[in-house]
Length: 175
Image (cartoon, rainbow, N blue to C red; front, side):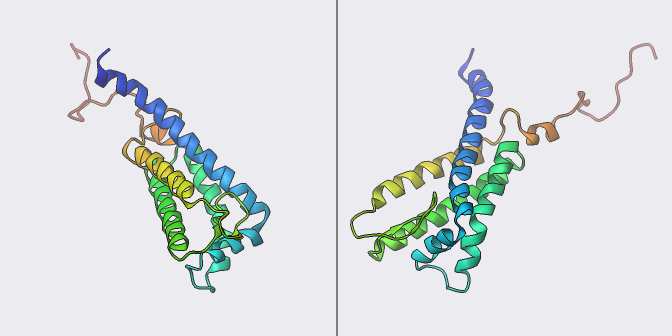
């Protein structure tokens, strides 16, 4: 089997794993926030990046957006758009981490629940950024290779029969 053919067989399965992995990360992030919405709002507030008027909206809506995005990824529905949304969220979180790090704030990012100010020296921003880079790599991969096994995108884009290239129906010989 040639390398190109092997990639053609492997890529949809790898994209499936990436898609489900991203969905799992989103679910793992959303559930604790949904269970404690005030903590989610505190986490957003701790970044000191958004105007106070929008902090409660963002803190309360973020876990539901994460869960909705996870559902789209699980279903393989609008996969490329879902990966763009994922990337936008990861860039936003990265900007937030860089912001608090640059300003010398010590916060629990609240990415997987909790959140808010924490004692000085208890946060490893290098680890947070490495995690974000990994998440951005996943999203970029899925943006480039959205075709995956067991996806509604694939089901919606499939044709039940082969359509002739020139769109002229083929007739059996002798008719």
